Amino acid sequence: MKCVICKDGNTEKGFTSVTLERNGMLFVVKQVPAHICTNCGEAYIDEKITSAILEMAQRAFFGGVQLEICSYKAA
Ligand SMILES: [Zn+2]
Image (tube, rainbow, N blue to C red; front, side, top):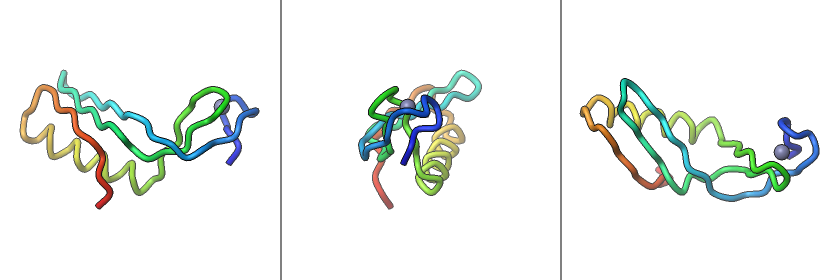
């Protein structure tokens, strides 16, 4: 896949971290499978994975945590 940010690099399978913030609460997911641009480092995450992360964050925010760091696990 061609990178749309730098329009020069190609993406490679790899892992990235995602940080979500809401009302001062921080939710960090590590080891998220993504396609990473070999040129600029931009990470592309599949829609399915993105929605799974948002769901995880929703649960954490609902539980009222201030900071949660976890690793992504494929369902
Ligand atoms: Zn790029």
